[in-house]
Image 1: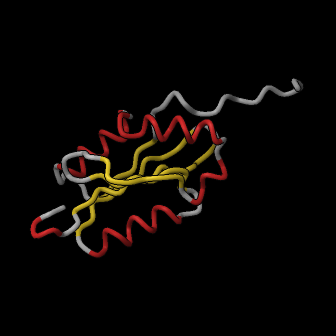
Image 2: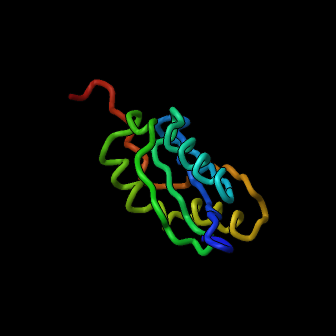
Length: 122
């Protein structure tokens, strides 16, 4: 919560680019637009996971986004467990918290991407 109870959130969306590449998209939003930003992140067709953090880096809420159907459930589970500790997510949050930027996107550096399918094997 910000001054006088207003929202001051950092909204993170993990966006599906391709099987082995997701993007961390973050924005800092205050007041009523914060809820709109959160809802937009949730409903975006390529958001595999979304999260809301306060300005001290505390996780407030999050979940699988509309694009979660593009990713295996075990990958979503792993992402959920590691999101708040991921180096790329932390870098984006730090930039938002320090007001270095109010919007930022970076490729997600992560070892949890689904393995490449082997052709010809059952």
